Image 1 (cartoon, rainbow, N blue to C red):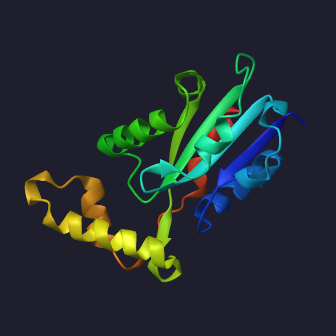
Image 2 (cartoon, helix red, strand yellow):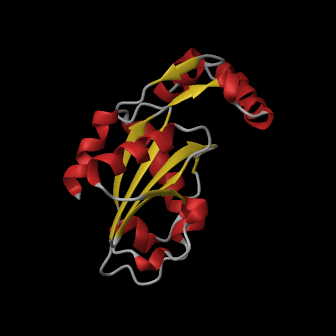
Length: 175
């Protein structure tokens, strides 16, 4: 098999998407921490959770890609923000560009999936970071609050789950 689903997941939402994609396609899924030679695969599907603006494990994993000319690369981000909001997508893509080479970014098909958060399961560090982001979000003038900022304020310190396994269908169709 010359295909692989690689995921970077901190709290399990991205892993859930990766496992479902694996089940629907028959392609093996594994954590980015377990990848030995990414160049051995012709089709690479990378799913990464969004944390502090970056895609979990993506930079570390895709930096080892050498010749991408004959490879199919799919990247799917998983985050709390609404993937139908253009402002959110622009911000995600900007962060992605800083994590991977321009060649990989241009070659990749990029998808955005909605995840979730359970504050009771966050590490102390992530709770502290989210608290700082929340306080900063509250200080943004109302007319300047983006959909992402509003969503962050509304969901702060709660358990929310926006996972939609049917949102994997465009990825499956691309394969």
